[in-house]
Length: 396
Image (cartoon, rainbow, N blue to C red; front, side):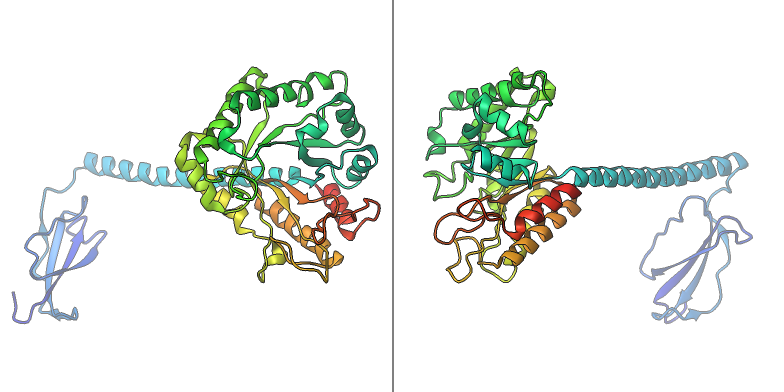
């Protein structure tokens, strides 16, 4: 090597005439270099550490026998097939993305907008609820008779039933609980006997327990194994129904209290739970921070990011007891702000494509400062949010 050589410039070519020449720089200490397939001709030139040539090229050398015509054709065929594979995979990925985008847009168009009606289950209240939305969330016990179900049907309202009760998750009799769910769906769920000869407005979801991670509701909010076992019992019992009539099981991902850490702990306790769940519920109330008007949107996005399964917002709301103290999970808002917050959240949820329902909490004001309702405590005065929900329902 010439004095001062620090690098070696390597030129590789397909033929001695220089076809397809490629340049590469290697360290002078490298004692072996293998040219790429199809480039058997090599030339070398010494260079300084900055790449400045020292002297001329050493002269082209054929490092292996030149490719035969058959070898060239075989290599070119292989290269062409590789290019076609890359192009095909890119095309398939684009088509798959288009299908997924179309599916998300379809989901957006059918995202349910509803109200949590609590115990407001009498005729005038149900009729008023039906004037704003087509879905209502309530405990199944309020609509566990033909007369009550007919009340919903006559106002074109579908129930999203909540199955809950007790104070200890671990003490719930799973067999009895699951039997209640199955019996209710046999009569009032989609395809149930109640709907024979009627327009079928039967329920297609079954929400299992309200806020199982809330220590104010449950003595054992961290009993993930018991919650998973209860859900599994319900799932297994529902196999008695025809497949098209089995409801989607809705399980809590944020526990209604602790955020996505609850859902992760639940799945860790029983990974198989993801195989039976039809959707994950969250209660993303806004709290007392600067983003309270938008609600706790990360509750929604985190649930989907972790599971890639549908998300159901079964409670979110903004109280309007201005001049009174904040509630435990929200600041107070004017009625116009409440309406704007609801609209903003629903439109945002629709844009995501994976949110299957947003249930506003709730129908009527209650208590000293829990004025979350779209009507006042008497149920006679509509707030602006009532008309907002009616408009959002019509848009959907």
